[in-house]
Picture 1 (spheres, one colour):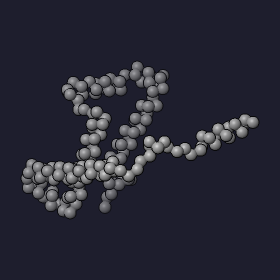
Picture 2 (tube, one colour):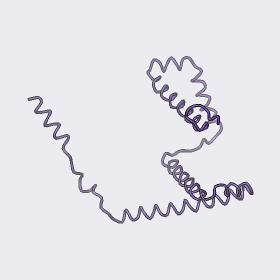
Picture 3 (cartoon, helix red, strand yellow):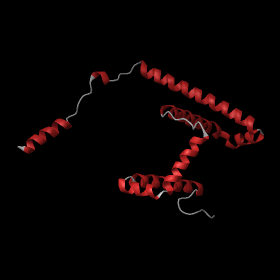
Picture 4 (cartoon, helix red, strand yellow):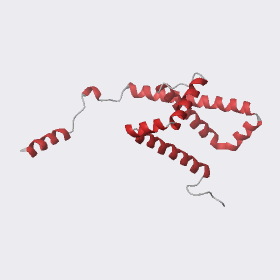
Length: 164
């Protein structure tokens, strides 16, 4: 009897369900509007990239011209990718409500708090007793991993340095 109840409950839970009609999406002007917004954003990104390139050439002078000539045919894709990354970062900045520190005192306070915790034996005893040590260990492994990835990129080799 018990298996019949659990089997029927399983069947009911596993049964495919239809979404309500209000969630159904049909081809409409929304897709056209989204496509137009995407094209506008692309055009804006390309214009911004060109302006950035021209201003960097003016700022750097002959060095900027030389850098541009070194890129050759890669100049446009590189500038496009940089402008797309910039726009993406702007969207993340706005969505996450990020803001730079308003005062140097805020930065000093953050680092002093970090240093005081790292050098305090009471803090380490507290995280050991509360179980918070696992989270700190995960953060440490993440930081070490990022450091190692940076080393690999810097060496341009996974193991050792290329001595050729």
